[in-house]
Length: 347
Image (cartoon, rainbow, N blue to C red; front, top):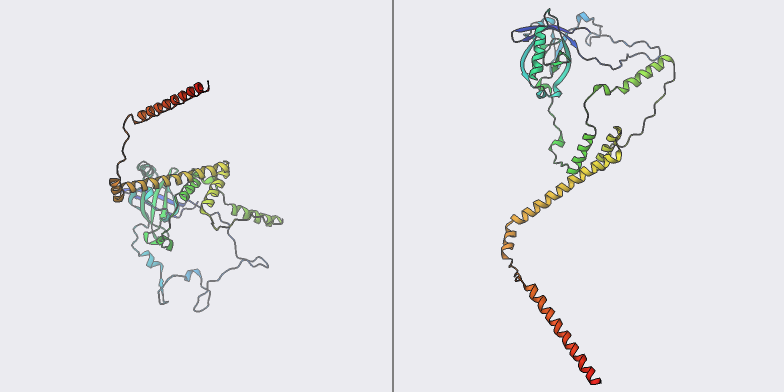
């Protein structure tokens, strides 16, 4: 690796000499613009728009265009005289929790390699950041531009990660933020089931750039003189969502299917979560309605006006049963006497 900057980290009164190395590299396949007929490279000339002549690199300067179209030409001396105190130093401003740094501000990372004979100050800063669970907010000048950056430990080394300045982050202004859109509890439950189905610990090694691999195979086939076959792509379903709940239910099932779990159990589990959420909402609504009816002034007035029902006396049921039994016995006796009288008349 080739270092892109050499200076020192200013840690209080301690100076830690370091070199910066780019911590990442792009793996995209680059192409040249060529002439289709013979493969010759297409080159561009640096031509002046005023006299039409080609300009050598030595005569090229930096210019700032004014709103009216005029150009202000800046020389190397103009940049050299700028008061940048961080041209050869990483100035530590403060130490903050890492979660307070908005990821949208994070830019390119660089490894910090200690260059001094004594690595103890470097290790001291690294260990202190790890123990405090903090990152250092710093300022540093890279490629003639002062930048805000974050200094954090990673895999035993310090990483300098550039940050955007606050005014470089655009504010999100979209019309849907002002719209009154509500999400049903059942839909939220289904979405949570989908998140749960795909929840895992992040392992970057599990992901590959399939497009780049396919492109490399195409290039190798061209080199070998073989025929390049067009792979058959599976038909994609329409992206239009007709039924949000159904789409969420299918998403949960597909997510669990990719993990080797039963798709039917995934659907049942998601449906159960949705039904449980719906029942809970209905139960809460009934309780709220009952409470409102009990505490309303109209309900209390109706309760006061309703006459009290007379309560039966204790033993009333027994007396009624005894009277019914006596009546049945008297009727039976009368029938028996009538039968005896009929029998004597016949004799």
